[in-house]
Structures are given as structure tokens and as C-alpha cells.
Length: 178
Image (cartoon, rainbow, N blue to C red; front, side, top):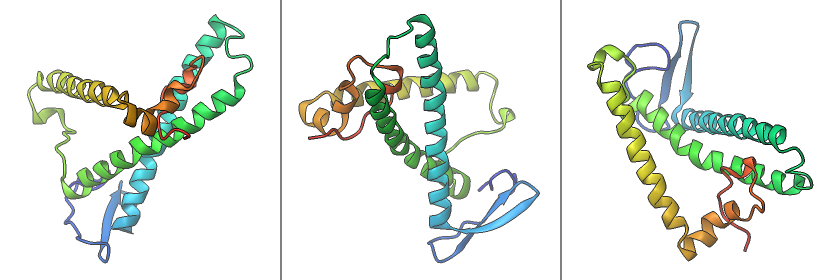
């Protein structure tokens, strides 16, 4: 299994009692317990998702402000609520992604190719298209599921509570207030 940034193979350690050696470039090598490494990976991915949300929604909100000044006037409380729920959703997306990323790096759980020479030139656009098709299919059907009454109340109503919707509501979708 590849170490983080080292290009070397690591022997896996099984269970939290055994330390996991993680290479971080040629400058630093540290030993981290497996649960700590999982937690750090989950936190890092959650922060990445949150940053992506802040950048994309912030850019859209700025563009909206420039094109339609005053559109969000008086919506400060709603926007704060949307941002809060969206950041909670960032953790919901980021934690599993962090666990999978850790498993890829340290356990070989998934096949993620990092060298273009591993496959023919057509493979990259074909795999990207396949990924987008699978992801959009998954998103469509889970979104349809979230519009069923029980699931809507449990996990999706918050997203639709924004009136009018703002750029910050993009990811606000977790348990609603009962």
C-alpha cells in the first residue's frame, strides 16, 4: 500500500493497538495510531468539503450580489442557518470520504490510479465519464428518496426551508427541526 506522498509500500497494521507508519514526503515520518489517522483523514476531508462549499457558494453569492444587489437583504439569519447546516453536511460527506481515502492509502481498499502510464490514454476520459454517470445516478435516486415523506422530514426538509433560496443553501440538508 502506498504511503502518503512517499511512493513506497507500507505493510499494514491491523487494529488500533499497533502503530501505523505514515510517510509525509521525505521531510517527516511519523507514527500515528490507526483511529487517530482515521480521525485526521475524516477531519481533513470534511475541511476540504467545507472549503469547497465556502468557495463555490461564496463565489455564487458574490455574483448574485453584483447582478442583483439587495436580493439577500434581511436574510442574514436564514443565511447563517444555511451555512451552519451546510457545514454539518460537509462533515456528513467528508467523514466517509476521509475513511475511504485512508483505506486507499493504507489498506488498498479502492483502486485509484495516480500514474497516467498505468492505462491507455482513453481510460482517463472514459473513467471520468463513468464516475460522473454513476455519481449523478446515485445523487438522483437518493434525492428522489429524500422527497419521500419520512425521509424528507428526517434529512431533507432543512434544504427546502430557505425562502427564498440563497447560494448558501446548496448543501444545507440534514435533520430538520421537528
